[in-house]
Image 1 (spheres, rainbow, N blue to C red):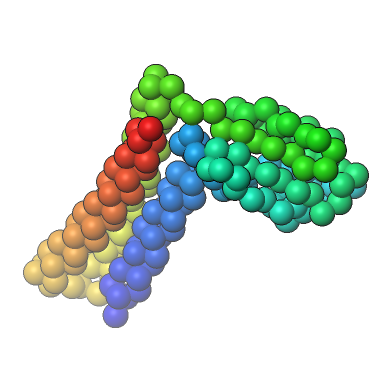
Image 2 (cartoon, rainbow, N blue to C red):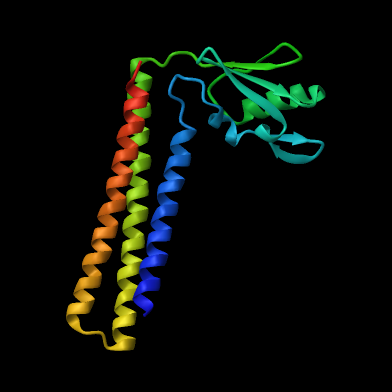
Length: 186
């Protein structure tokens, strides 16, 4: 029955939207040192764009500082340039052997600003979920026409689509409120 496939595909897409949201939230600065902030740093390593975390060891020191130890010490300058280019909002400090990123505590205004960003990103994820719901409903209508489905079966499937949508919207709300709490915690 093609409706099973419809739900499998829809749920898979909604799951991907939630995972994408979680990944985006992981890169948001909260005042604590988090190695995931370095995921968007790409270093020009002998002409090849290489993710920073593949070419160095990253450790959290004292909760406020990331210590980046490159495997190849000759590219420290390139790593610093890549960090500045990635606009992390933190200036890298190098001693020639390691690079330190010290996360300053966030001001109250900055926390509120980040909290607004979290809400905006969460809302975009909800829009993505609703778009998936719309596509599922459209596909259900096509299946209905092709297979002459009874009206009650169509209604049941529409209810299932709405329940699935509600489930994922709630997951997004939960993830967003957790991130907001993390941002607002001093």
